[in-house]
Image 1 (cartoon, rainbow, N blue to C red):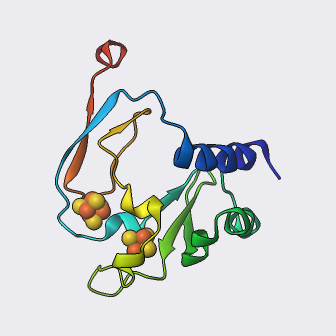
Image 2: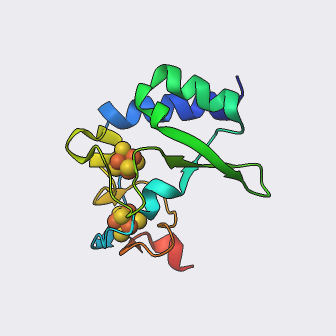
Length: 129
Ligand code: SF4
Ligand code: SF4
């Protein structure tokens, strides 16, 4: 198991129990495009074996499968529970991971999926330098 994957397991675990220092505000609305379920960035995972390890620790990762690997070797996932209209077929029973997405505030600066109705507002002075 790589260090990146160990960190992923660790941070995924923490995300359910430990509030993080939050400095980036998420603004906007959900336009129900489904892109966040279609193109999930799998930080720390590099291949099928890594995904299987995540599925072992977090069973709801069994909904996900690998769709592509980018030039940096990062993998992207899609969800089997998304239908062709971009709707979640298990909406009432979707995992906490999905219920919490996107959070109102997050601790790191990132990018929302293409076409997403939400944007990230940077509140950190260093981001303007
Ligand atoms: S990508 Fe953004 S707008 Fe589209 S479904 Fe997900 S949260 Fe909603
Ligand atoms: S379970 Fe539903 S909300 Fe969660 S990623 Fe899959 S389709 Fe999206």
